[in-house]
Image (cartoon, rainbow, N blue to C red; front, side):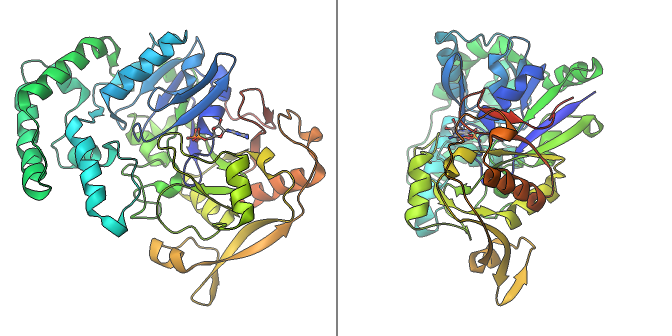
Length: 427
Ligand code: GDP
């Protein structure tokens, strides 16, 4: 009963969409387990270019059941819009399943997200403003609305009314904002339900049945390990667990079913939003990477901060996730940059360390670099290892050593087929 997880090893945007779409040819279920529409997964294949925020990136394969697990927070407006977009472009979404236990991002969550971020002033976290954090807050506070609640027409006004009493006090008294009317929200929920009902399912059962049948289940990470609320650079993190534990909880998955956990890394590092980033390049090379790779957020359009590959952070991700293999993406972007630097340790308060520290110490960490020779030959679109320039091979091999997991797949371009497969990630 094999399940395989693909998890961002950095601060997100590693190219999960592309890789999940590529790997899904061998999957029967592809499952999102955490985060919400703060994720932006870009897929480029024969059907076109797609930016997905909630629908799993395996949706393009006819044998795949794409599922949204209980650990995800779902904004039905965004989900329905995304489904309409896919259908409008000829993609079949009829097999999509949404967990009845997934929490709903309500309009007041979106509003509170923006107000809370404004109130943080100079200490803003750089949230995507999509209501994801406040929805997780309500889940933990037991004030959340679940997808299953939307279907329960009789109880919905009561459940929603309880949550709204608290939210409206917060909005009006703390933020001087307009309250929401219960009747309007109930009407909104009923409109959502009319369309969503056929897709709501017990996703844990779907997955257990697929596993019992010996089918491949692919777990699609969102964000990245360094944004994990427990294992990332707190407080500059997301509100869920993108790491492997989040996949178990976020789907109700039997942990013994996990046969592989693969970390996906860009060949360099990027970060969106605030927070420490020791290898950040505030220079011409950083600008060159950003322009060449068009490092602007899929969800927000914000410029991503760019820097050298940080192997200390990468190793931390590998440790907390137990990565059994690694995927390196965007190798093509580094063409023509020489030498290439890789951070192999930090100096923190005069001490050399290879341990990834907490956010305060990380802000004081000075990277210790190893230099590797770059290459000038083009690598974009290559599909064979022996076609790669020798120095690109050395670079990838060194990243695998430093991460502590062998590199199984290299991505050389955004398109599905621009991929070098060195070893099987699944079954
Ligand atoms: P995700 O959130 O991890 O799926 O990553 P994003 O979709 O936000 O960002 C990845 C971007 O890189 C997208 O525009 C992809 O099309 C693109 N991409 C993925 N792999 C490669 C690659 O190997 N080379 C290049 N040049 N672009 C890639």
